[in-house]
Image (cartoon, rainbow, N blue to C red; front, side, top):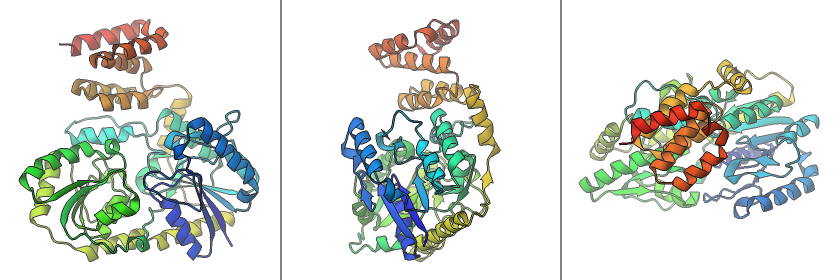
Length: 461
């Protein structure tokens, strides 16, 4: 019997669903979940680290790992999720049980014990989220934008460590393939057994359920909501946040429209809404996917501007007809958890038989990583242009986000200058002065002074 341990975090309930259906296929599968989150996903073993500060988390994880090492050794396969390990991770505030060791020592440890190592990516664990800003700016009408780097600085090194020891890197869709040096795609699992809702809401509603408002582009959705509420006062416009997943699904089950995300893809929320027969609106950029990815032929409505979003919602309000059977068929045929679990079981068996996996290799990732380890600022063009645009817009939330993502990938001197300058524009003088002091060597360079002077002349009125 194949035995697999899924750990250490649960993202969108994926590992829990995969494990459930692996068990139906005769696989001994267990899930360790470190965090409960507001969604209330549960594994077989739950540490509930959410309620503990970092120092306490580290103690709990260290004790848990050391006391259960014999338990871990019983499994043929250690299947990591979200590029975190049992002893070190960056998700949900992070943990580091053995700070004196290399953060990823555990991978080599299990490898030396003869374990097969699999890691699943679910999105932002491998993706530089500058990509969201890039596509949101395109949604706003910006043209000729350079494409962002594939990862953040720290992500490159994390992914490299996993790639050295993993027998397989698995992605939930083909868009993520480019963000690691190699990998395969197995679609995200959908568990129809967990969607047998008895309390069906028959009211027509338009819903948006972002896990992260910033990443999902909620500001565009809410702006359109505010306009259409005045025109259609009898229709419910619902923003669904911070609800347990079971409670949220009761709202999804109503009829109407679901708006997923304004960036470049669709997620679990789209599949859930389609399964219940809702019309789904999202922004899918086909260039991000490879042929055959089921997301490319999802029965949804893609929009690429605020005007298109508003017009599409209005059109669907006035021309609504539920085609639940067609939508449900799409979800089941392409994402049903029993089929997805079979793909994972087959993968595990191939690994245990020491057979080769037909990976897709990514030369662009290797080229970018080579630039990173050689300290080349290969992404200067992207971060320079994007931060110029955001400064001009006085969009400080996204500016701070991109400056943070760009450190060590773009021109650090330029990014520090823009950060300090923008803080002063926001009247955050004390914070600006502290940052100047912390970067005294940079601030005293001629390059910094020249950049700061140009910023002052171009933006101060």
